Image (cartoon, rainbow, N blue to C red; front, side):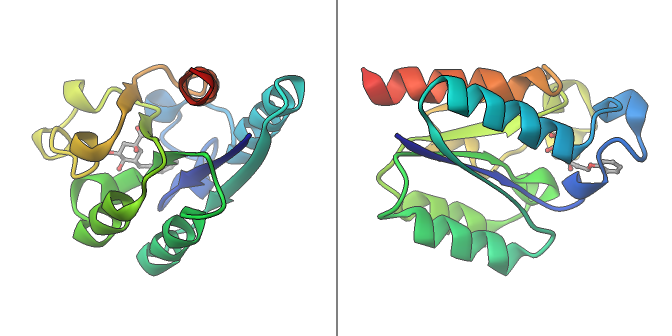
Length: 144
Ligand code: CA2
């Protein structure tokens, strides 16, 4: 089973700033935990971060014939990117939208997501645990 986790802009700074909002773990910590979970569950996991919209679009496109499921924390692009929305819409594999924070108890501009409507499900507000929750949910969904 092949799953990819995509991370959008500024998530490379996790653990450095805004710790009260996003926690003190780094993206590397998240990747290590996810890789460990993947190994224990026979998942072939890819983990990718970019600050560049076009790079995320290219990764989404190349997931088309390569992955069985895609998990995306698109960061700020969640609320703005028609290009990421369009790229995800082309996919036939299940998509889970993921956020570390609860975007619905934050600023109004974070309440709108261009991804939710095309996602199988959304996980937000559970901090770094959300990544493992998403992987576990994706595995079960693919197997069903
Ligand atoms: O809660 C999430 O996971 C978000 O996707 C994070 C995005 C934010 O724009 C979304 O509304 C919700 C921002 C990630 C920024 O991460 C930082 C980490 C450390 C320091 C500064 C930003």
